[in-house]
Image: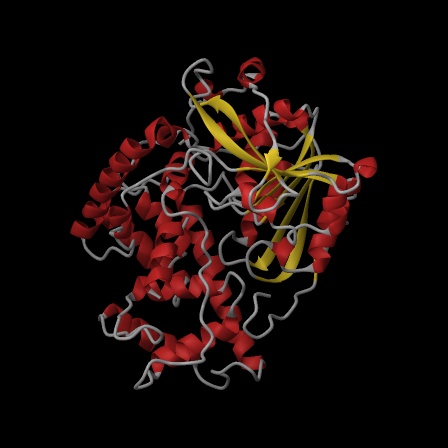
Amino acid sequence: MRALARRLTAAILTLTTLLAYAPRPAHADRAQSPIAWKPCPQDGTVQCGTMRVPVDWSEPSGPGLDIALARSPAADRTARVGTLLVNPGGPGVSAAGLVLDHGYFGTDVRRRFDIVGVDPRGAGRSAPVLCDQALVDRKPAPLFTTEAEFRQAGEYNRRLATDCAGRSGAVYRHADSISVVHDMEAVRIALGEQRISFYGASYGSLLGLLYAERYPHRLRALVLDSVMDHSAGVDAFLTQTADAVQAAFDQFVAWCARDGRCVLRGRDIKLIWAELMRRATAGQLIDPYDPPDRIGAWDLISAAFSAFYGPQWYSFAYYLKDAYEPAPEPVAGSPVLESADLTTPHSFGAVMCQDWWLPVDGFTAYRDRMRALAVRAPQMLASPLALTALGGCLGRETPVNPQRPIPPATGPVLVVNSRYDPATAYVWAQQVTRQLGPAARLLTYQGWGHVAYTHSPCVSGAVDRYLIGLTMPASGASCPAIEPQPFGIG
């Protein structure tokens, strides 16, 4: 459980002119370098390669870095539609790894597209951000109760940034999503494609939005799955994510009341949760699967947040029962919660704190916001992803890519989102679709969990049809919820 909490804590989530990052197609052409493809060591049917891009796109002749790619060629070359660039989010999850996962996309998509994943700069095999692991492990939980804790968090963030920058080099200061978008355009040119299609999940949806903003005529199709709203200011960012994670908790309670296989069926889960939170806050809650270790309030809400990703409701119910009524010996045979593992622990801050401006004017303003959030989310208190982002960016420099209004789309965009997504709020999908205008359409999965494509054949089928034939679902279309199965993910 400690490892889970560390991964989640490390994982989780002002208009400024961007003249230095304005699109420069000529620069991208000069930055182009041949990609020497060769069979990937993990899977010979997939090709791996690297290409050189500028560290700083405002200085295209300056120092460079190598970004890593993977390509799964279209199985039917005669029916090939084109290239599908993909990104699974994080920020910091390997896109090359998604390409190596042959089970992710449908058979028809793999038959008709070259699927290409580019590890974002700072992550995977693309000049990964390096930091002192011992320092990363000392990251404070962002549930600050005193002004001293709040101040120390800012000091810690500056110390961590200095350490990571020293170990990683210039890429640490240039790991923002706009730089990644310019890398994507350089890859398009290197591949010789006039236009590409793009599928971005979770944080990868931000890359899709930014690419559409800067290179709209280079997009054939764009899918935004579980979308980030990059127009949300700090208060909307906090309140809308808090509403989403609280709704996910309430859905778990409702499920347990109707499913006879829930180990807590018939019991007052909110009362049990309140007692567990009391013990955790007092330092008295023993980890049921790793005694005598104790877990705090941050660990507990992070475990819930992780469980709602699948959702892993059956496992989470066992976890709560075993924590509430601890056995005299370590529990054997109970299902174990899996980490959501949103990102690598080192690249998250380097990316998030350059893409989002989340100012908090001192501890008093932070405390007042937390009190207001606790009214909206009485069990979850706040979104762990949002708090990790806010707490992890305290004391950091002003970002190069802060939030701003999303411009209307010039081509068709398919937005998909779960109604009860704990991480990317459904209201974000609604807001982004409205901002993109009439060219965009929202497909709602009426169920639970994060990344709708993986949760419903109805959703994946609609996405596949759009990618292959540009056939959009009907306006207002939705897919029915699928009840999670025991100990599985959806």
